[in-house]
Length: 125
Image (cartoon, rainbow, N blue to C red; front, side, top):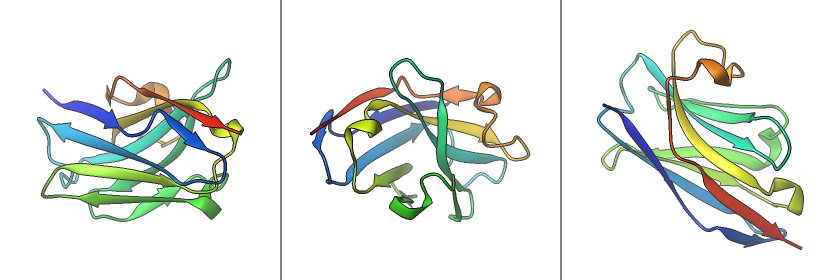
């Protein structure tokens, strides 16, 4: 059974870079059946897909985040990491890592099959 666990700082300051890591167990992040995503949910709003890293290592970023976002991975540790630069208080949200099957539209987060528990990130001004 696949499990995903987010880790990273709960509090960052405006203009800093937020780095969040997802550690995967029970599955391979190089399995060509899945993509590995980051999704966030700001307070009082719906989920927003940020981007994903494919089994090949290629990344696909939501255009709304593209100028300040990258995703990397360490296959030996079965981890992938979100790097979100120049954060502002509007980036305050619960951040999730999640898995979706290849062929599922990335923005269709309701169709993702596995989720981490989420981690609260607050950006202070």
